[in-house]
Figure 1 (cartoon, helix red, strand yellow):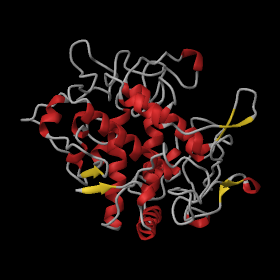
Figure 2 (cartoon, rainbow, N blue to C red; figure 1 turned 60 degrees about the vertical axis):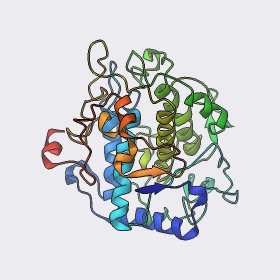
Figure 3 (cartoon, one colour; figure 1 turned 30 degrees about the vertical axis):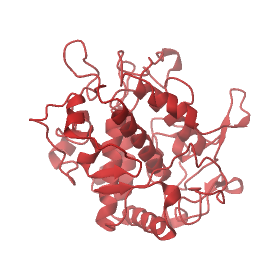
Length: 361
């Protein structure tokens, strides 16, 4: 069982092993068709995340955001990156960033992820807020995939951040905070998992069409409902007023994306243990039929037919645990999450996407 640790508790050697594995993944060739634009194995993840948002329309969420599959899609997504890293260094696991605790922009603050031996620091205002410290700079970390859906995304090959800032409606740069422990605790008390309508919004490119997200755990954690805008706020905080790399659909260009989503996944795992009788919704039956890709047994693009929300409800079945896990997610808990124990199919570790699946995309 892989154990995901708090990044604040990693040793220098553990940080070095993790960043070296990421750098090696960035050097390895893509497994996608060259016409798709990905030039490295790491950039494949940027591509998949981009594509997950491109199919959003005025009537349905994308494959991975603004709907019930937000959490299971990202659970599988970051797990695949972790497995890729383990192919490079078997000692490496994906750490999580608890931003309710380690919430300073100061790299010298205890437990900061913004150190020279880990994520690197804030962007340099004299260089367009490009990150100039840490391992993800210069030729080590050239960005190659961008959000073509939004023509205003800077096509800068460098990682960019302006930590802890945002532009307000008047265009002034203001300071913002990361989600607080109180906001997270309120989120963990929210039930059910999701409610109809089975989307948080209609069209992000047309704010006037946005629906009001209904109270539910997933909506609150993703950041469409309630105080704190939890997941969304972290993307904004890292990207900053300049709308840096974490702001766009191509946000996995910033490696801190995976630490952030590991923490989001950890919170979902905690909620599952605290609410064993709260199943995944929509089930895809009767009156609970959501958008394609978001029902309990729907295949999640682009992972192939065997990867469904149902197949990833138990994170232990994917081969990992968090250092904060207190109660194992047993088969009984899986059953509480709408799963038929006798027919449950495990996702085989290492399986990702077949050529047949690629050709269907």
